[in-house]
Image (cartoon, rainbow over all chains, first blue to last red; front, side):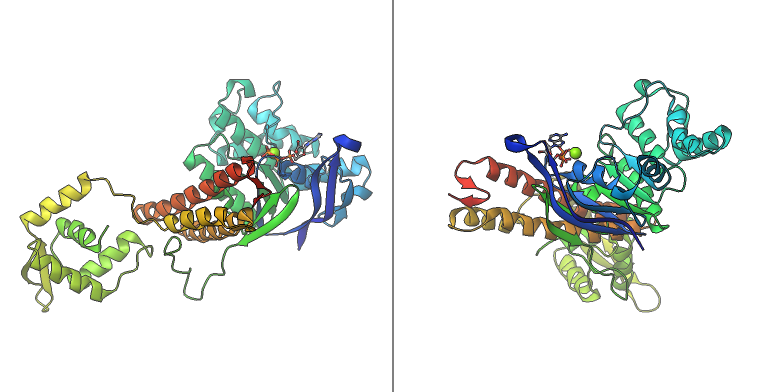
Length: 242
Length: 178
Ligand SMILES: Nc1ncnc2c1ncn2[C@@H]1O[C@H](COP(=O)(O)OP(=O)(O)OP(=O)(O)O)[C@@H](O)[C@H]1O
Ligand SMILES: [Mg+2]
């Protein structure tokens, strides 16, 4: 089942001589159970792609379909509802609300879903626990380290029954082990039926995905897929050309 | 690095016979370093010839047991104390290929880089999948896989930096020599 579909999506910022084509006719589908990584140099259109997929921005041309619904055809209220219910988003600049504690930040989307504050709080603590930061639940974002803020932002995206996870450089401020733990959880979530798009410039992190697409100047120029597992386990690897 | 030193390290823990060494070696390095039993026996013969191991009886079922000699032990200490030389890396072939590509007119070097990047990422994906399946307490195998993963990552980063330099150079336009 397809969770996300971009059909010939183009996004042009500005007009006339100042126009910048940030995304240029991109077609991409993400199925349930699949994790797709997007790589590319700075300015190649990675965040633009993710913003369009998450309904935070509208394409100049083309169609974005999430969970079977074409975003362009939804009223802004229905779009906001779909975003809240179906999409977990980790922003490149995190976007935590400074006036709310870590737990309140994580619980907020669930409360907006209409569940009780108590239940939402319980879910928030559980989500923080999964990312190893339950101990800072009552602190405010400004009093957290970069890596802690990052994990709170990820916990917020993972809470509730969200089926499409969109993450923009979610491992930037994390050390090797914590970064890996986040990717492991992202994969687990995908393996249990979600779909994920991971934007990263780190090859080691992109390698957790089933597919890696390469963006250049707003276009997909190549794609890498893990090889099929062989019958008797994984292919024997020599670690490169030899 | 040689199989030779790997076997010396295992024999330092306890004397063993060939098949036992083969099994233990596989347990320690996972499948990252395939080695057949024949290689074990030829290596043992060479180690014995060089005085680094010596026969130490048999296990009762006719398996010849080998033990480390003093000079074998010295050899092992020296190995641990010496950094591994970064020579003969497969990347050298790649560096030469790119250097040549830069000078051959009409070659889209950016395309050469991307082809390589995709291949490297695929290797990384395969290694990462192997790593996902390793039991968390299998530290030896995890470390061995990590080593391959970080090497592949270094290559990917180097390719990125090549592309940046290429795009920043006035002598090339979109990756092709002007
Ligand atoms: N609001 C905007 N107005 C004008 N141009 C924009 C706007 N947002 C993005 N762009 C341009 O679109 C292009 C793609 O930007 P985008 O943020 O998608 O890149 P990115 O791949 O995420 O880069 P990075 O790795 O630096 O985060 C860039 O040239 C950028 O300057
Ligand atoms: Mg970005």
